Each structure stands twice: as structure tokens, then as C-alpha cells.
Length: 141
Image 1 (cartoon, rainbow, N blue to C red):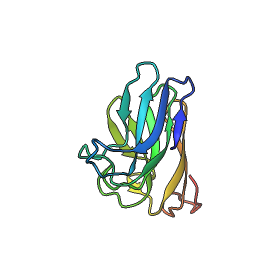
Image 2: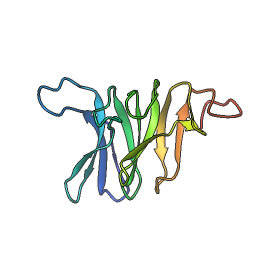
Image 3: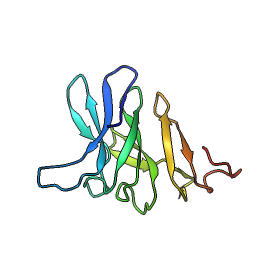
Image 4: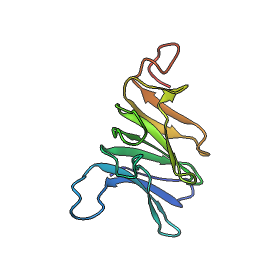
């Protein structure tokens, strides 16, 4: 299990096998977030159709206020037209998940991993093997 506790220890994000009931055979890892004050657990990695991710999601990090959660996933149903392992950020207040491993609307042409989120959730730093995400051709962003 991968997990991350935010600075003030109010939120814990973790990856867990996503099942809705015991007849659900989807065993891919998904991202959940627990509010340690209220005990409420929220699904973070959710497909565009409201279904669980169709491949593993892992490596969550949380902004200090718990609003933003960044994670990696090989799922193709988190945003439209996504065939590779990429990084995503979910805004918990708006329930919108966006592709992070892209520049000016162009998704990376290879895998991106190891995301780190700034304390306020406004910036994400990550490693990528994509050749089209940097103008200088280096393989990190």
C-alpha cells in the first residue's frame, strides 16, 4: 500500500484495491483519501463515467489543505483519450481530475512518474520519459 499524510496530519491518501461489493472482480489499485478528523473516506481516482479506474493508480500526494491530490495511473478512463501511464491531479472541491503530465494540452508520449506536489497544490514536479514535454529535450520536468 502506498500512502501519504499531509503536513498537518488531517488527511491520509492511499492506494487500495477498489471494490464496490464482493462480486466486483476489479482488483486494480485506486486512490482514496481519509479525513482523520471526520473519518470520511473519498474516492479520488474515478473514471470519467464514475466507474473505478481500469488499471492501477498509486503514489498519491496531498496539498496541505487536502484540496489537491496528485497521483500516477495507467488507467485509460480517468480523462478522455489517454493511452499511457501518466500523472493526474484531482481538485476535491470541484471533483475535477486533470492530466498533469502534459504541456499546453499535449500529453506526454511516454510514461511519467514520481510526482511531488507543492504545499498549496499549485505546482507539480515529476519525472518523465516523454521527449515532447520539454523544449530542450531533457527527460525531466
